[in-house]
Image 1 (cartoon, rainbow, N blue to C red):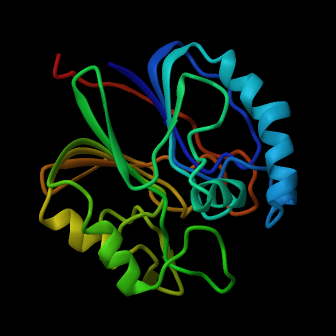
Image 2: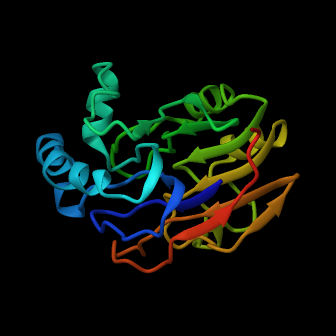
Image 3: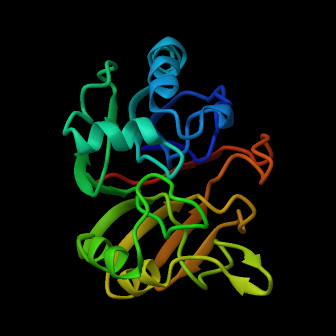
Length: 222
């Protein structure tokens, strides 16, 4: 299966090469729409949905991010799948099977200084991440793990990833993990505990396009 993966696009809609699966790891909306679910809803249907329709891929899998307030509103109202384009599936702590691959997505992150979407405290994150299945082909997590290949980067000398996610990964067999959220984290391939992990955030901390899309091909279970 040919895969293109990205995250944290913040309104910058990329051109992608033809692929089977396009993965988006959250934070799709422009930064000027932060905390405004109504503006995000209008932009989604007027800009994002038409862009999705023209993508040269069979499937689009997306997890929401902490800036995606519109998706949190839909999730709370149990309307997250009513998003128009049929090729798009939004994963919010649930799994899907595509061409023999089992794929799970989780949007949740640690709370920063302000109350963003899909944020949980440490106890909540522990419970959420423990629901990740024991075996997966692909995990899509908006949050980056703690102290795994500097995927979450360093601030003030400290790794800012999620220890709760790292603890969950320690006891699971997952072939590929795609994360984002921490824009300045290490974007190179990381091999850890039998897994291949990538931080695929697209933008830098100023929410400007900085990093390339990830393209790779993986075997399916078909």
